[in-house]
Image 1 (spheres, rainbow, N blue to C red):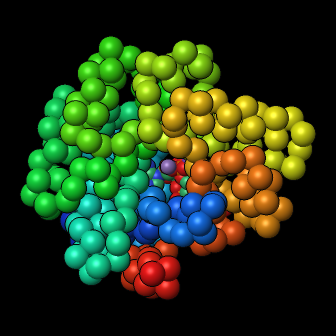
Image 2: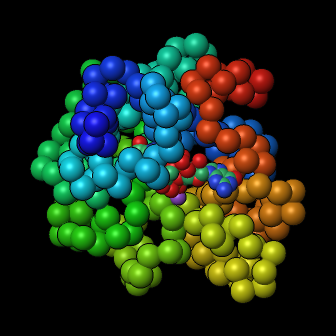
Length: 253
Ligand code: G
Ligand code: G
Ligand code: MN
Ligand code: NA
C-alpha cells in the first residue's frame, strides 16, 4: 500500500501514539513540562520514526489531520495529569508549516482547549523560523492570536534557520529551543560561543532557553554553567509513552 494510504488507515485504526519527552529545569532539577512527539506503531513494520512519515504527511496535507489528533491527545493527557494532582505541567506540541498556513488555526486550537477544559497557559506551540518566514504577515496575525489566548510560542531548532535576528523581535517568542547540533558539540569552542550568545541574548529579552538533545554529563555541566534555563535529552530521558511519563512525574513530586 502507498505510504499516504497507510497513514490514513493508521489514523483510523489507532496505530499512532503520542510519546512525551521531559523538559527539566537546570537550577531546580525539576520537571517543568514535556514535548509531545508522535510515534507510529505499524502492524507489520513495527515502530516507524516520524522522520519517515512527517515529510510525506506534510506534502499530502495529512499533517493537518495528524496535527489535530496530536494536539487533542496531548491536551487531554495534560489535563489528566493536572487532574491527577501532578502539579501544573506544561505541554509542548509541534506545529508544521502546513498547519500554520491553513486558515483558522488559532480558532481550532482555542476550541480544542475549551472542549478539553485545558488552561491555555499550559500549552506551548513549537514552530520553526522557516515556518514563520514562509508568510510573515499571516504569521504575525496567528502569533497575535496565540498571545491573546495565552499560549506560549517556542522557536524550535533555533539557530539552524537562515533568518535574521530581527525576527526575534517580531515573533517575541516565549522560548528558544537551542538546536541539538549546537548542544551535541557544545564542548567545541565555536559552538560554545554561539550557545552562550543565544542564552545571553534570550535572558536580556526575557525569553526562556531550552537546550535540546542533552546526552552527557559534560554537556549538562557546560549548559548549566552558561545559564541555560531548561534541557531536554537522553541524559534525563528519551520520549516515553504517557504511562512512562506519569511515572516520571510521580517520582518528581
Ligand atoms: O521524536 P523524533 O526525534 O523522532 O522526531 C523527529 C521529528 O519529527 C522532529 O523534527 C519532530 O519535530 C517531528 N515531530 C514529532 N512529532 C511531531 C508532531 O506531532 N507534529 C509535527 N509536525 N512534527 C513532529
Ligand atoms: O521537534 P524536534 O525536531 O526538536 O524533535 C526533537 C527530536 O530529538 C525528537 O526526534 C527526539 O526524539 C530527539 N531527541 C530528543 N532527545 C535527544 C537526545 O538526547 N539525542 C538525540 N540524538 N536525539 C534526541
Ligand atoms: Mn520540537
Ligand atoms: Na528541535
